[in-house]
Amino acid sequence: MLARVVTGLYLAYLAAPIALLALGSFGDLWLNTLLPTGATLRWYEEVARDPSFRRAFVSSLGVAAATCAVCLAAGLPLAYAVYRSPSARVRALARALYQLPVALPALVLAFGFILVFSSDALPWLGSVWLLVGGHVVLGLPYFLQAVVADMQRLGLRELEQAAESLGAGATQRFFHVIVPSLRHSILSGLIVVAALSIGEFQFSNLVAGFLNRTYPVVLLQAFYGATGFACAATVVLLALALTASLAGALSARQAAGVPVSA
Amino acid sequence: MSGRAPVSAAVEVRGLTFRYPGSGAGVIDVSMTIEPGELVVCIGPSGCGKTTLLKLIAGFLAPQSGRVLLGGEDVTAAGARTRGCGVVFQAYALFPHMKVWQNVAYPLRVRGASPADQRRRAGEMLERVGLAEFAERLPARLSGGQQQRVALARALAFEPRALLLDEPLSALDAATRVAMRDEIRRIQKLHGIASLLITHDQDEALSLADRVLVLRDGRLVQFDTPHAIYDRPADAFVANFVGRANVLRGVAAGPERVDLACGALRVPAHGRADGVPLELLVRPERLEAVAGPGEPNVFAVRVLRDRFLGATRQLEVLADGDTLLKFETTSREPVSHVRIPVDAIQRLPHDPGAPA
Image (cartoon, rainbow over all chains, first blue to last red; front, side, top):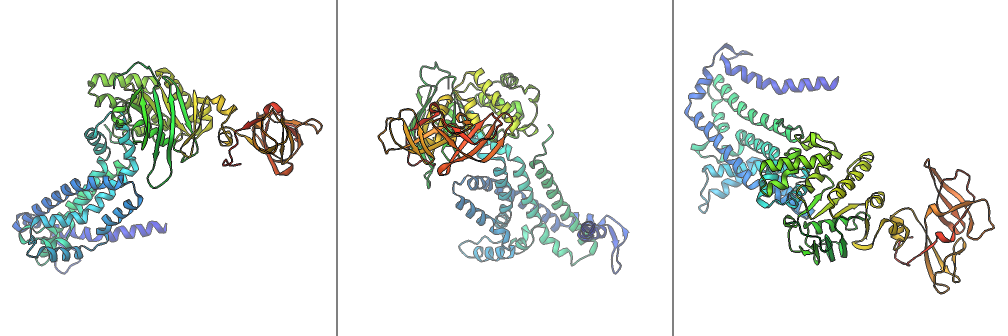
């Protein structure tokens, strides 16, 4: 009973700001009242027309996609190396190392990047690739976590040995066994990475160049303008991130053993 | 990869040694053969190297010395892919994203068989293990026993040169295990394939095997038929590990007499000089309960434990000198004296390092 009340209160606490934002984005006027008055879609139209928001939206999608691509290309071999390492000490060390960024404030990472990449030797501050690089550092731990755990759960090594004894070569094992049996964790890992990249503010705000600012960075500016506009812009971000995590949750559920209907 | 006439042993290992780096565990100087159609069961306590032996034959590990021959051909340098051994894993290792029939057809798929051939062959194999109606399911939708039968069908679908089973029954519940044991034997006979089955279960070993291979600390202790292993164990370790055993330690005191802590025992001629320590084996079911003293080899005992198992009773009784005897009988009478028949006693090759 108590647990239910607490859960209910917590959910309300969680949902109230989001509900208000959504309400505000459709409200015509919202000054000193508790709730906005009037109903309109013009804030969304304005966000859609605003060139800096349009650019930021595209930037965000591009950075998220590139971050996912790098995480996949680097993360899958890395996860495999960690999983296959014969030494328990090496495995533990690797895990501690790749999970370090989780504990690391993005702000610290950003200062580090600024120090290193504003030098004359590496003058890359403001480039979109540096932004992607930072997002990879922040997102990769989650990807590795998901994929390594799945490898252990599946007993990937035995699956590979089975395939090998049945006559499959390395390429066949990779495409017939490794990738398909890990597909759910790869997908859910990438979706977490995408959601993280889309919502990331601290690091992006400091490191992004003026022309490749991501959506959350631009969003901050909106709060100096009309409330309705700021609300609508936030809801757009929320929808993006929510789509990503919802898809992630669904694929995680499938990975947990609920089979895909053929 | 082609099937060849079985001119020599289907599987032969010679002086095979593999030690895991950083530990002494592994397999040390093991030599053995599996004849065509024969089922060899490898048994030993955990960590004795039995799974390592299987991995060395399958090609998952490369030995530090020794050779592996399949059908007379030296495959020591070949990887698992080209050895053509069908392997059944303890945890089944079915591909979770493939339907049952696709799992069974996988070895044919990598060999470039046509989709129609794959389906037909998978259907035949599933028919043989009684799972034809589950062809379209995913492995996760089957019970453990069913999954293991799929794994068996998959391992045999490409006419392998040998079948290797790594503790195939240990993940199953007790009831399924016995049924699956018979099933494995039936399918193995049907295919007439040389097979190696790893287990730590002595019932499994004795009831399934044509020959039993006992490993201890990586070394081959005994390799013989189940009857020979049970009736003439090589040492106290084998005697205790395969079946229940009384291993009695004493000192020779005459050509047909050994002095034990509980008294003098008349034994078959042992051929040892007086004063030489001996180890004797008596199986618990060979002991007899008697009414009282008078005959030779009768000892007064105190019952420590008495377990009623329905058809039989398993007792532990204590004779003089803290001599613990395991005793199995169908009688329900109280026990005060036991007799050790002379023909039930055999001398073990003395091994001072063996646990008592």
